Image (tube, rainbow, N blue to C red; front, side, top):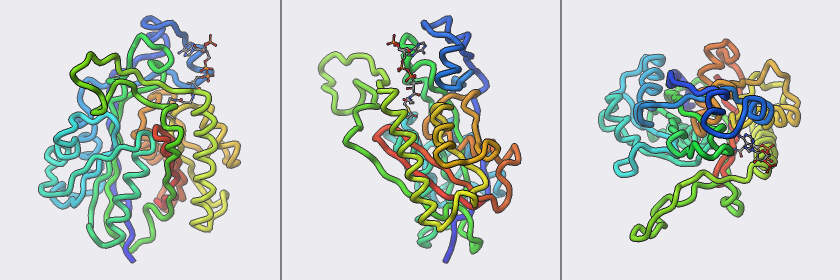
Amino acid sequence: MSYAQITGWGKCIPPASISNDEISNIVDTNDEWITTRTGIKSRRVSHVSTADLATVAAKQALACAGVDGKDIDLVLLATCTPSTMVANTASLVQKNIGAVGAAAMDTNAACSGFLYALQAATAQIRAGMIKKAVVIAAERMTWYINWARRDSAVLFGDGAGAVVLEASDTPSGLLATKTGCDSEDRDILHIENFGSDLNKYEPIGPSNLLFEGREIFKRAVKGMSEACDDVLNQAQLELDDIDVLVPHQANLRIIQAIQQRLKVADEKVMVNIADYGNTSAATIAIAICEAVEQGLIKPNSNIMSAAFGAGLTWAASYIKW
Ligand code: ACO
């Protein structure tokens, strides 16, 4: 049986940032409110496209793996902020990284997108359909931001992360996973006035990002914790076997609530929300890269990751590094 080993990783963090104090000059908010409610201190704002962010992260991951773009069979891009819809954004990334002839596909599961994409690419490798894939999560969330709305303006940021997967006999990579979607409540997190359901012959209103924060908070804690329990059962692991928890970075208090529920020690949890805010699908991909850079993730580490986002999609994954 072949596994889908993670052999390379990379990220793209836009250099420009907006601190809480700076955002307070634009909208009626303050550092104290944002910090205590969310744990966010600053967020990155990209001046380049989602495809550009994705390309940098993918090129880094390929260089890290020592894999040439032309040897890649699949470019899978998780994003809810595609640069273009037709043609898909993955096709531009495929071109940029020289993955000549590789399959190229965008996938949108909002904040759960990276774990959904990792599952899809891993399944293809483990089934023997392909040998090498690059899985990218890239978002330009600030493109959606209405800077006059304080509820959403403070929460989101831009960035990208990527991993290279290669067929291998070593039992590693994504070894257990659970993905799902609670669509009955999909309306509690959505972007209004956006998409092909609109009557384009009538004036279209502003496309604000709307959400019921408290309800999402509760659902996210429950959804991610239960998905982790499920994956632990599937993998026949105890929580003590987990070396690193990499949760979606939407709110520090959500992360702490999951950590408490699962009883995971502080030093095992990867948290970088203070610097980047919520970069949707990209949070986990970036956090994995940074956990490796910081030495939190080491060879053979057992990683548990969990995500929750619009849809309401959710996912948990057990990854052996
Ligand atoms: N600055 C100051 N005050 C604010 C701000 C702000 N940026 N945003 C909202 N407020 C005000 C509200 O207007 C409200 O005022 P009111 O009581 O006079 O009406 C008050 O703060 C409290 O608002 P709540 O929504 O009750 O605040 P809460 O403690 O729930 O925190 C938050 C809001 C941070 C959004 C939290 O609910 C949360 O993190 N939810 C989950 C994450 C989420 O929804 N993210 C967006 C979706 S994406 C995802 O990753 C799942």
